Length: 144
Length: 144
DNA sequence: TTTATATCATATTAAATCTATATGAATAAC
DNA sequence: GTTATTCATATAGATTTAATATGATATAAA
Ligand code: FES
Ligand code: FES
Image 1: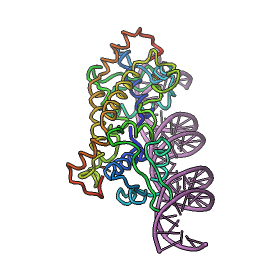
Image 2 (image 1 turned 120 degrees about the horizontal axis):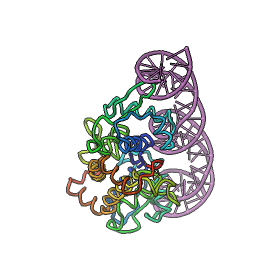
Image 3 (image 1 turned 45 degrees about the vertical axis):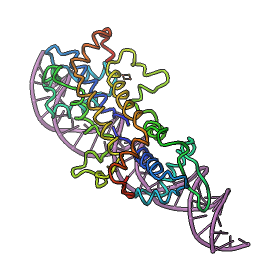
Image 4 (image 1 turned 180 degrees about the vertical axis):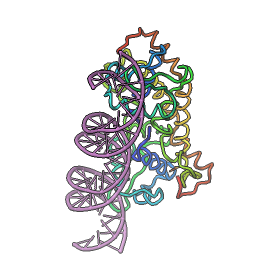
């Protein structure tokens, strides 16, 4: 029942971009330093984020990334789904035709309830909310 | 963000025992047949459940397992935690001293909210609730 | 007393997934 | 042309998952 490092790092990465959303392009190296995450691993992650159109990028010297939209336009759910896929606790809920047991399965109702509970949380928190919490906490740049 | 087969099978196993809670001891072989799960794998799972005192067992011919308590005394959460450990989406929430970033980390508040949402679901559904749902659905013995 | 049926206890393994690291090309500022 | 950066893939080590295998121990029934 764990979220992988890809999902967790992606959220910290996007929050870092949101906190430093000044219009400048931020190189992944800065974020890797601040977040103490492997630069190359973050590169992989932001590539995926970039392909989804969540960030704008500029190559070459003085290049980097910035948010493509406003912080309030990103929910935590959008970011987690991008990295983790559907937030279902079991594959039964995602299979195209559904699990063959699904029509008579009772436990699937539990998994569905878990999924909905999780979605209700992550789809109702935006990066803007997290930026606000960050500012309330004291804005230490090295810890997000 | 998945629950492992151990957790899923454990719930189906316990629900099977709850549905067939007649006072007789049920051999794991029957459950394996009904649930279409490997008998040996189920043995491993019920060993863990048995050591936790959730079921009573009788060895030898005519032996098997039965629930140690009433179906309403088992929550889904008890069963999942036994097999999966804490239902936290990240280890930060479980580490004894907490994560070293935790005091200034904002994303941890998201993970905490997810954990609480999941717990709110699983700690408020009992095996008795699931038995009832099963009976409403039609009581096909081969599908739980 | 033998046989069949079970639980109980570990060991082993194949596959999948996770978590990176490595290599190098393409692009742009200076 | 040198440096800084994104972009694109390949590779690999570690861990976890999901079983399977082996065999000992206990009990009821034949
Ligand atoms: S086993 Fe797939 S829906 Fe229950
Ligand atoms: S990284 Fe551990 S609490 Fe945020």
